[in-house]
Image 1: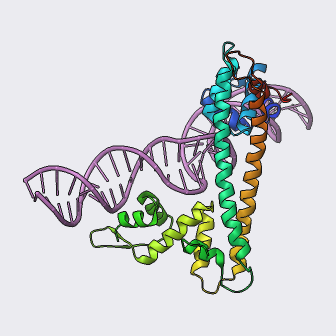
Image 2 (image 1 turned 45 degrees about the vertical axis):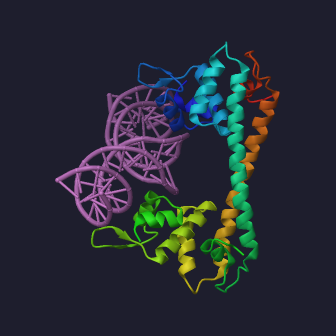
Image 3 (image 1 turned 60 degrees about the vertical axis):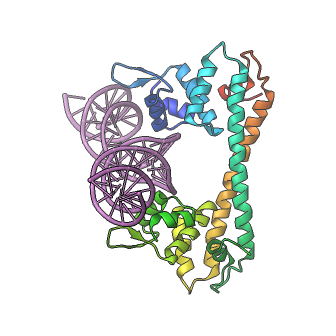
Amino acid sequence: MNIGEVARRSGLPAKTIRYYEEIDLIRPQRSENGYRSFAENDLHKLAFLGRARALGFTIEECRTLLALYEDETRESAEVKRVAEEHLRHIDEKIAELQDMRATLSHLVRACAGDDRPDCPILQGLANETVE
Amino acid sequence: MNIGEVARRSGLPAKTIRYYEEIDLIRPQRSENGYRSFAENDLHKLAFLGRARALGFTIEECRTLLALYEDETRESAEVKRVAEEHLRHIDEKIAELQDMRATLSHLVRACAGDDRPDCPILQGLANETVE
DNA sequence: CCTTGACCTTCCCGTGACTGGAAGCCCTAT
DNA sequence: ATAGGGCTTCCAGTCACGGGAAGGTCAAGG
């Protein structure tokens, strides 16, 4: 398979696939003409990576997960540990965003949004104390 | 004021303040010796920027908000529009993260996390269909 | 046989918002 | 005179790619 087909079947852009090769996540063969030649296994790995990335794992976490996936002697505890840590990270980000959301929507609700210059949003940004 | 004091009083790293000058968010004076010389107004703007950034506004949104803040003839509607758009963006990110969270925590719950290799997390990443 | 067009290659630059570090000047205190 | 801390600029790196240029390869059609 050439990169175009793999891109289509994996859902990943060709650029991304080349990048994953560059950072040694995959090691496709090369044809005589210099083109990358992907095996089913490469496609499989790329799909795996695509799904892991879609869940927000960093590239390095993906590398770890892929290694565990290929290690028949892995302990599921290790996989779970990686996943749980990422889950905590997601929770932190959600909490952070919800804090922002709360503050900002409070300001937005207080703003008349008309043609006058008075604006609680700007006041909130200008002063430590919002109220 | 030198940059050190402004950094302390604004809560922003000196590096960030220099960066904000570089991208023309602030324009502090210079002393004879070449040091940046910050006025109270600069400090005020930096605090404004720090709070806007903490609410997740991008630098370009901060630039807009700062311009509106300094424009006595602004209409609060314009500020509100910027804030509401950012709010929508925050909501999108929260939704995205909650989707990730749901999928991932589902997988994590299904994983025994013991010394055996069988792992629903890896299976979920390997196959399109999780169950 | 030649050309067209789709595909592939590498290489380099840009993204956002900084952060780290090197090399060197300035200022105050001892 | 020196030691230290603070200040300056400049360069490089971060993360995970994306855009685009310059050029090689291949199959189909004229």
